Image (cartoon, rainbow, N blue to C red; front, side):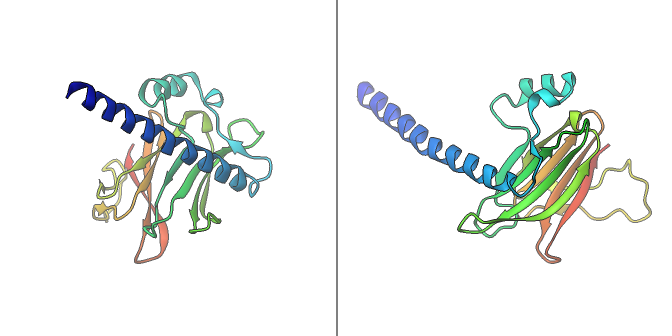
Length: 181
């Protein structure tokens, strides 16, 4: 019985690895197509970040690409992309969100310049996460907390701030909430 369970586990592990490899190739292929829409830009690399950011990323997310999030951001059932892109100029980068259709045609729906690219990384923010504006932002009218109805993207400025970007279905646009100072 023990040998049988071991064989089943080995078979399942092999199946998972076989299914994951084509997905990584599809993701890479899609990113290469997307990069053609941003001439002169490339994915922000680990080496282009400052030493504190590199160390933090390697310690906390060693297997993840801190410049790519692939998930369904708008709830249409198709994987979308969020990317940190860098051009040749020192310190400048872009954060972009692209919605992709069933046939993997991706459309840029949001873009913002990142002035100090050496300290940033992105991570997915899970569905049903609650995000609310930090109290550090002085305002008379704090917006209510938002429960994400699809995956969001958390953009972290290491040691400075965190901003969650999410799709507002009602207003049909990307919204941002600064969650930490």
